[in-house]
Length: 318
Length: 304
Picture 1 (tube, each protein chain N blue to C red):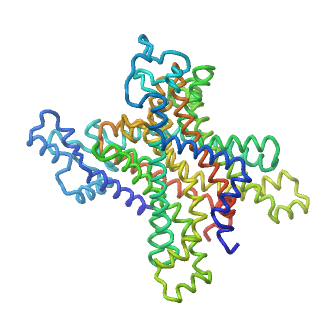
Picture 2 (cartoon, helix red, strand yellow):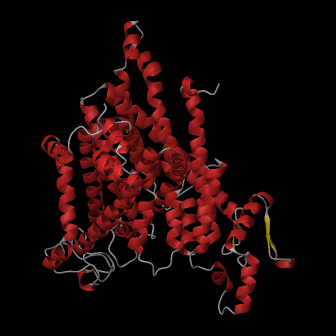
Picture 3 (cartoon, rainbow over the protein chains, first blue to last red):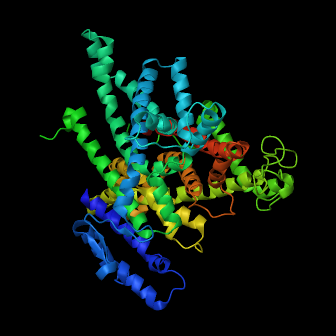
């Protein structure tokens, strides 16, 4: 797990620091004299060879870093994931300030799409070839094929502007007003849930159809277990295994997807931070965001592995 | 269950198209938009506009909005014009198809090519090669590639050709999923008698790959390729949407959709045409891929 993160950090670092772009030149201002440039490089630690910068970066995570000396020195406390000289802020603090928005978006829509996706998939499988099943399949085909930003824009257009039933483009802190927080996020949640939930409908339906033809389901029915318990206790547990795997993979990758969704709904989350950093060539922030995204993926995978044990006794560690 | 490919690839494609109406509709969609991409210059010549020329006469001078209904749709401008610039939207969408297809198909070639070679090496050679490859694939699947690609867009110099960068990066990050499936296929193929016979006769790994493994991999590879094109097309559109894809003025559906955000309340037609084009391509490849998968490899279908 730590090894994966180290590889991600290393690759990102190498790519970002080997391409010809000089953060010191951007920070040095105009006109940039060679002395000022050298001073800026030394201050930021860009005068060292790249491998040494990588080691400094890694040790900074555990011990913190201090840039420069004397009165102008900037201290970045441990765990230090870099310091953005353009925004004059600790990268971790920048991420922390934006995280609640992205987190609200991700968790809310994930809950929605897993619950609705699985429910629709199960119901469609149990009522195969009815109108509901066909409608669910058709809807999931659209959901899989339509890009999330397209659905989002159509949602804004129809529900936000034409019908004017949901608010567009304002975010309220949860601590400030939970009701307005949820109301402002309703549209983004539904849009993300529609785009992602489509996969879950397909997956759950296929899995459920397969499971319901297994021998143990027939046995359960034969010994007189009520149908509700057959589905709820015997079938659903097996259906949930691949669903959990998919959720883990998607949740880890959601940060990437959130970048797009946040742009559509103009939410001030991590995506905005990343895009701003791209436009201002803020390398430390870019590096920090990439590492943080890698961290999320790794954590999501670990949670999936642990939840196998809960769902499937065969996967339990002895 | 011993043969991974139920029947020959051309026969399977024919039977899919004859039987499965959705797959047929998907194929027709893909072929039509593919032809549009190939003959983009001819089509725009017939219409009489290119995607680069500004034309303020097609705009309402007071608002900068297209003059006329539905974003200025007329015999002159078939899909209307872009707000503020007056560039012809039909030409932009048609040339955008070229961008999407070029990057989507080339990136798929890169990722499938890499995936097949790497996956076959892991499955056939086994041992430490297999362990290293399986481990690398795990790392790659845990890599936050979209965030990384966005960040990469910022640091790569403008002089580097963007289309090439997108093809290489999108293609490169696609290999692990292909490699996993190919590895599993090769593991079963390896134990079949014709492969054992070839090995006993002294065929090198490369010869076995070319003559024995590859012909049996075409089915699943074709399914994977078809199903991965929409993801790649979508990724190009998403990156262009975020402003780190192909650079202006090269037409791209993603960038058009992105600029349409600011106009969606007053000029929804500007969103509609590039959006529909993107949806059609994604849906077409998905429908064709699903049909092929059902026909060529039922086991792949059960997994997803």
